[in-house]
Image (cartoon, rainbow, N blue to C red; front, side, top):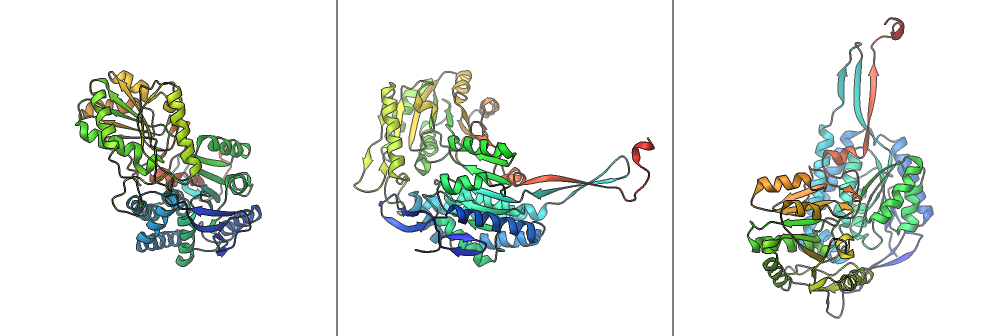
Length: 483
């Protein structure tokens, strides 16, 4: 057994459950991890509490900037090695994992620069006093991330949380802890103060619940499913603990008839099946203008048949395996549900190979808005195609689920695209592209897709609170007597 926990600056052996971390492409064990016990999670929380209360971390902006940049440099120098590890652990193609590492580096650099430029605001008041407004960290924050982008989504939380001056207890998904374990080792090499960053691998019912319910944790930031997010929100509401939630999606891509069909098909495939469709913003609902619907479906199915499934480490691979056998069976269960409800499976849903959790991408047509496969997040390579006639129907269909995380609009008429975008409920809308997050712009959703935002200045603001100090230079007569 190796030491996979980081508590108070030391890598330590877990005392909780033993878990085999499996390569989803081969079903072979990559490594065996001994997870954190409840007692060790409590120790990590206390270490973070001490680091926040008893050190200069929260006030020493120069140190935070220096260490974030040092961590970015470490990641950059080991990009290939870390991308291979991410690819093996998640099943995503290596070329996609490499982009994740590069984006993580850029995120660390962005928040180092943003915090370096951040200044206190000084306001001269009507009574001659001065108001100073500054952003101060919450304290101890618990960061909980899912298995689909273990490193990148972790950095999206970790970088602004540390930049703002918080200390962290981090729980990766129990399925994909490997790149965060590597990151924990890199923080030690960089010289992060003990207790500033703590890593506690484990599952939700033990590690996650301990973090969420702890009175010593000041904020919880969670990315994952809506059901778990609702439970976390309920727990945090009991003590008014601050919370950010980035939850599920059932994102639409609107395809208007004025676009080149072959290019639109490529974007639809990318939107739906990138990262095996295991993406919260996957465009799992393709809405196509009626006049081009039939031709679009034919071209989409034909192109889907050519998608290269296989070993994620091979350059030519376009789609890897799903994360686990359990998740593969979940995706397959939705195929059965769709067919029972009367939808037509145009393609996909076949297992590939003798080992690994590979399945061909699934395309359904003849769906209606109330169908389960139209309403529920499936989180796999699963796309439903609907037709629309005119902008009003397109907007109604696009807004027709409980989720509102993202959307895409493909149209050469930018006036129309912007007009439609104004009326679509979504936190991020791409016009004539899809999927790309921008580190300097906010990321998050409306409705049941979550609360709060990641990335951009808004991401930094989500890890701090404004504090107002009013200064009168000299103690004088009590103000209201002299009014």
